[in-house]
Image (cartoon, rainbow, N blue to C red; front, side, top):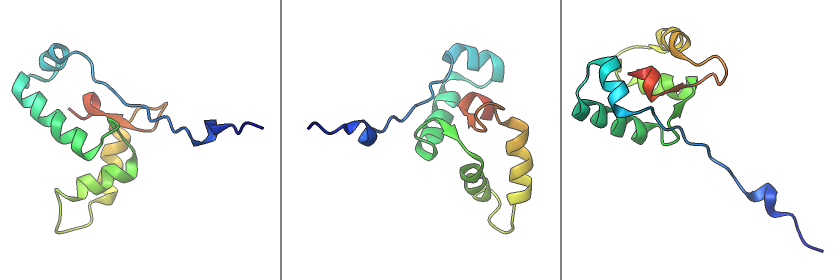
Length: 93
């Protein structure tokens, strides 16, 4: 009897941003600046998507002296995609 190994196959979906030129014109950042930001974003969020808890952890690094979780919640909910409840690189730039 063959075992069904599908339950052990994990599919990780990765997000890929739109064309670089589109981001440049939309944000007014340079190509170099966007590539640098994207590299940092991918280090923190390898899948290219951020949920609220991860966002709060990242956001707290900018405010080490206090609890920024309520403000991070507000910012996240302003930017998140309704369908997935997550944000991606384009939304965060």
